[in-house]
Amino acid sequence: MKAQLPATGAQTTCRAFTLLELLVSLAVLGFIILVVAQMLGPATAITRTGNKHIDTDTQARVILDRMAVDFAQMLKRTDVDYYLKAPTGYKNPNAHGKNIKLQGGAQKGNDQIAFFSQTLGYNDTSSSWQSPISVVAYRLNGNPNSPSYLMLERMGKGLLWNGVSNSTNPNAIYPIVFLPGQIAPVGGGATTGPWAGPWYAAVNNDNSGKSSDPDYQTIGPGVFRLEYYYLRKDGSIKDVPAITWDATQTVSANLNAFSDVEAIVVAIAVIDPATRSMISPATLVNMMSDMADFKNANGNGIGAQKIGDLENNWNLAVQNAASTGTTSDGSPFPPAAASAIRIYNRYFDLRTPAQY
Image (tube, rainbow, N blue to C red; front, side, top):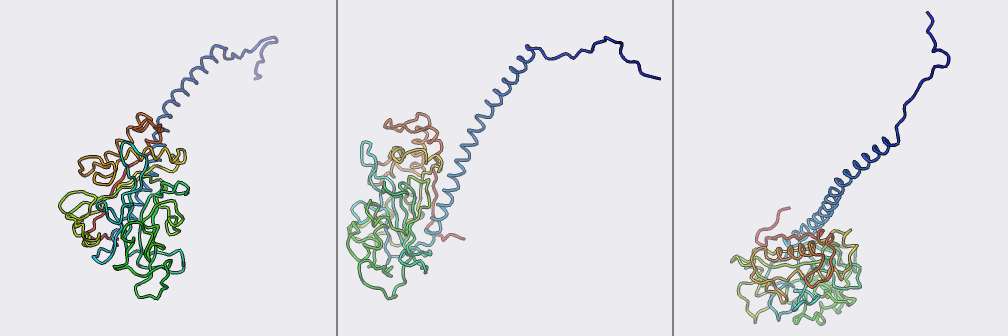
């Protein structure tokens, strides 16, 4: 049976979208895109902030773990020298940091510390040997002309063993560890004495060529603030390590191998590398000046000191900048940059050796 074809002249029709329908469809599509974009915007910002915090968390963990190794291996003896925070007038005034931006007082800034430790170290004069004893030092680079300005540096300067033959010129790398060998000569200037040359950078943070020691390595490019203090056995927290201090005795004698210290507490402020690259060092200095020194330090303290006070003060400074876009003196500080700053601290027990 044959199929019937349409009659001659019959027409088939195909209905298309009208202009109005196209416009309505485009409007609905645009609305959907707008809603999705509004949902993704905060999610992207949260993700970006989270990634920044991951960066700072990772960096802080590496730094504090490295410090844990150094402090655990510190030579805690009465016959070795230390360069650390102590009462004003002793040989280590720079341990309280260099003066930074002044706000109604002397704000000393980032702390320094140097000590002997049973950790491996190299020496810039010979990279072919390692020493099991090192002068270890931590500082925030204070030279504005240095690529690592306001970044945390660590020195691990390997020392020769006692009794090893060595020349006796002022620039020699002396093998002496025990007293009277000192990390810095008495008086704090570190400009005289046999150790003034090779160990100058361990206790000085100026713009001289000697401070740019090649044995310093940048371990915290995001760290721009460093303070430390002591948790003493009597439960107090101070920047003077001994419960009683005899001004007629040396730092080592007063320390008595850290007999009064339960732990060293280190606090650092860290900003992620991407954010740091977008703000100037001067802007970071504005934030630094809002982060107070420890109370007893020779600078602008924060009042009655209890555990956590220092870190809380720093967090309040960061939160203020994040909400107002300025530091306390009205200097601009990008809120997004402030939100990227994180504060960390760790207690390093000096009485119980760490387990690794």
